[in-house]
Length: 246
Length: 227
Ligand SMILES: Nc1ncnc2c1ncn2[C@@H]1O[C@H](COP(=O)(O)OP(=O)(O)OP(=O)(O)O)[C@@H](O)[C@H]1O
Ligand SMILES: [Mg+2]
Image (cartoon, rainbow over all chains, first blue to last red; front, side, top):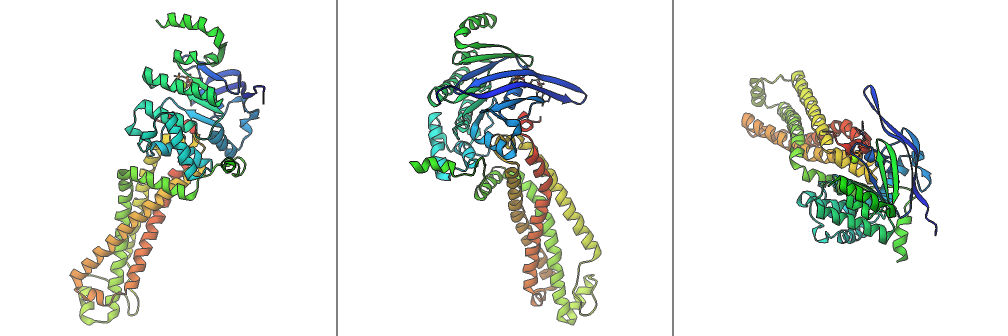
């Protein structure tokens, strides 16, 4: 394959939530195409619908109308097994709140998706150690989450997201709960993955440093895409934001 | 090296798996790291099952004494206030005993449902995370059932033994060694086994509804957490 294909295509996605009597319109018609290997950042104010959009892309929730295509397959057509397979093999999730399984060690957290994928114990262990090495936590493989710092937990989550060599990594504010330096490390790690492994990275963030490494930035506000900027156009608006955030 | 690539594709198309041995491993891990909660859940089971086992063992001992035809022993029995059955029939538990037994088992199940519901809401995030990583509903269901079975086995084994021992010690004090001269040991072993079986059954019944709730939960709900 020489031409880059759309790994994710979002078409006219609308999402409403029913709250007792009122209906909240959260996504109001989102269209988006993401190419294989791209590093995408999604920016937008709190409550603009970033997490909701992520859940649609990741097959964690279904749109009220419209479709999400992964590799040109409409994921609303998938049955429970295929959806689980998609979550297990195609997509790696990283969350703002880490979501490391508390009763398992770092290594066990990383190998769990591989076990679901049917990888043998030994192979999973070996690969798990390699992944922990990549994120710089090889020595801590036997530690439980409560013995790890926030940044370390998030690095375990990154390693876990990589377990089954996913085509897509969905990272919802991966640096949101981390201090600046640790946040930078995670960003560097993601960038390295995108460059060296060709993983498509879609990340929601408030972190301006995240924008510097992105190929495209999608600005969403109030459930709609406001604008999409390529990296070369970015410096201008970054300057503006810089002033705004001063 | 060709092998290595192959191992992934040998899996049936688009399937996720959780081998049974792995389920057990995870369940044991989960029990161990929540040992306090496990103890509370298991405590009501231990109490109820030890009561059940106590009553059963008692009735076997009394039957043994009664069947012995030993006049003095039977006299001691009626002095103790036991209603003796007709000639040739085994001593059975009284309706009152059965009623209390039923109530205690009921309370036990309700207690298990209650603590398991709490356990499920404590573990929302964990369940949601597992689902995001590709777990099927039935993986979650299986984990909860295995945990409940293990708790049931341990709890009711402790309860059954405790009940039998208390009953035998009590009989020893009341009737002296003749309590054991006539009793059929097989019956006691069987009643202990039955108690363990009943305990496992109750533990599983108690976890069914909470486990179904957990298994059916959609990952987004779980990730949003319910504070
Ligand atoms: N399950 C739900 N039920 C009802 N309303 C919801 C639900 N999920 C999200 N919303 C609403 O949708 C809107 C967008 O939420 P979302 O979490 O997508 O925002 P966000 O852009 O991720 O914000 P943040 O940057 O704070 O994470 C919010 O107003 C929220 O209240
Ligand atoms: Mg969000």
